[in-house]
Each structure stands twice: as C-alpha cells, then as structure tokens.
Length: 425
Image (tube, rainbow, N blue to C red; front, side, top):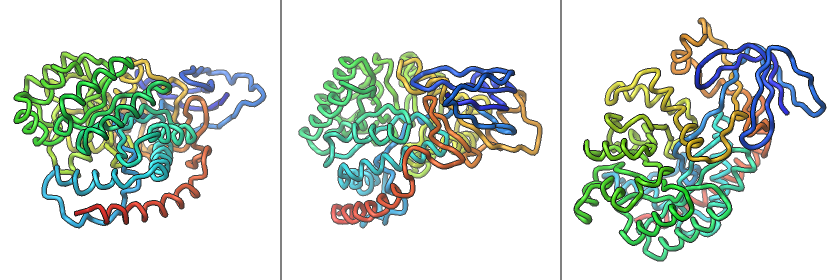
C-alpha cells in the first residue's frame, strides 16, 4: 500500500479538488481511497508526505514508436529526403532494418524510462524491426514491465519488405496476442497488399482486438490507394472490415474527405493525433472537423512527454483546428476512455502522478485548465505510481538502473548509426 498524506487530489474527470489523504492499493486496476482523516498506517505501507503537492491520474500515450528511441542526434542520411516517402525510405525504414533484438530491448528501456519520468504509465506502441522480428514484441513488453509502465503493443505489418516479411509479422503478432493484450499493427495502405490487409483484419477479429494503423499521414497514401484500389483509404478499410473492429486506432488522419470523416465518426473508432510529428515531417495539419469526439494524443516516437504534446497540439490548433482549453484537456485524457472501453488493463485508478507545482496565482477547479496549459509541465512530475507501485520517486526511476541502461544505449546507438550508414543509398 502507498499512503499519500496531506495531498491535494484533483479528480481528472470532474476537476474537483480534494484536501486530505490518498490510500493507493497495489495491483492491476485497483482502487484508491480518499479520506479527510489520516487512516491507520499498516505495516509495510509506504508513506509519502504530499503537503503542498497536487495528485492526479497519471498520463497515457495514444501512439508511440519504441523503435525510434535511439535516433536522437543521429547523422543525416546520405541522400536528403525530398518528400515524406523519402523520409520513410532513407531514415525510418533504414533505422528499423538496422535494429536487432538488443537494440530493440534498450530502445524499449529508454522509452519506458522516459514515459515514467514524464508521468506516463501507459503507452500504446507501434513497432517495426524487420531484421529482428521474432520475439520483438515480448522483448519490448519485458522491458516495459521491468520499468513498470503498462502497454498495448503491436507490430507494424507491411508488404514493403516482401510477402515473406509480412507473413512473419503476422506470425509474430499472433504469437504475442496468445498471451498478451495488444493490437494488430499495420503500417499504411500504400505498403499493404489486399491479401495481407485481409489476413491482418481477420487476425484482429479472431483475437478480439483491433488494428493500429497509419491513415493518410501524407497525401501519397490517398493517391496510391485510389490509383491501385479505385477508392480512398478509409473506404478501403471500411470495405475490408476494419471499421467494424471497435478497438481499432486510426493514426494521423490528415488527408480526409467529408465522406471519410463521416465514416470515422459513425464507426466510433479512436483517432490518434500527432501534431509535432506532422510538423517535423511537414506533411500537413490535422483538423478535427466532423471526425467526432474520439480524438486522443500521441507522440509518434518524437518523445514521451504528453504534457508537451498537449501544449503543441493546442497552440498549433489555433491555426488549423477548432480547439479551446476544454477540448485540449479532453483530447489529452481521451486515451483513458479508449483503454477502459476496450477492456484493456493497466490504466486503473491506482495510476497517479504527484506534481510539485507551486503556482504563483490562485489554482482551483475554476481555472484548472489555464494552469494545465500554461503552468504545469513535466518538470513538475516528482513521484509516479503505476498500478499501485512507486516507479518514480523524487524524479528518479526506482525499478531499473537508469544510468547503466543509458550507458549501454549510447554504445548501441553508435553501432546502430553505423549500420544505417551502410544501408543508406
């Protein structure tokens, strides 16, 4: 048990402020108890004095990429990309082909540590490592479990490396889903044959889960789909049954017609918005018009800081979207609704963050949203509790040796970049 005494607890749904004590039960999807009277402290209870601190539900990431964790600072490719397809070809598809299971493992460690220290206790990840496919999802899961971050993993199935690789990706996915919660990952329409897309959709239905797929991140995805299949991406996915899989996640969704937006809204599926990645790749702007309310935030592997993602989404949205303070908080928290409604575990009440936030102005329910956007950031994350376990204490990860992991990761990143250099055109 963990007792957060003398806390100011902020209900993440109602935004009500409660002054008192928070008793946290350990385990998956366990409860918390709020009390104005200090409860009896049983042997083994971990007590943290939260006087002057704010406690609320921890955060979750709606779309991440573990495989990009060792990319920070890597050399530019030999050929400078001229468009989005070339960014994929010369950078990210070169990187994922250079991964082995060791670099996958340490990429997962680095990602999970970054999530934890930013108050993120649940990550939905979309992985790719074509030359180290077998066992890759379990490798990621083991690293995340060790750090203490819950997860919903998928492997990025694609025909871009041939039908044999696509079959192996389907096999890796099916094997993983036999004993783990997860999704069936798909890259994008323009790298998926009808045969592979059909098999992936059937696998998701068989495993009672959904697909996790990139949708119209660039106009090329739509142009290719229409040229080859005489229909647009969402129409293709509807016809094959993806929109009927209610646990599915549609990622990016930048280039959509009104008809496609209507189909998404009617399906009730969740859209993962990734503002900073879209800006970084210069692919276009997200607009929520007519898509519906099921919009959640991701980082697309850019980083693991959901508070930063929320701020970027709000400010960029002033130029290209209809978004206010209430709406950005709504999108920031929508991922929890997705996890709960899809009956996935690991995001229960006993996932909490303690914020050492000392505002210089009044702070309460009436102006919480203003403080959320303009005041609170990841530097205020002091303690993090995941499934009732303290995984970050005084801004330090308690479950693994962060320094040792980072030293290994630095060494591995050099080797990774060298392999990328050899593969590049």
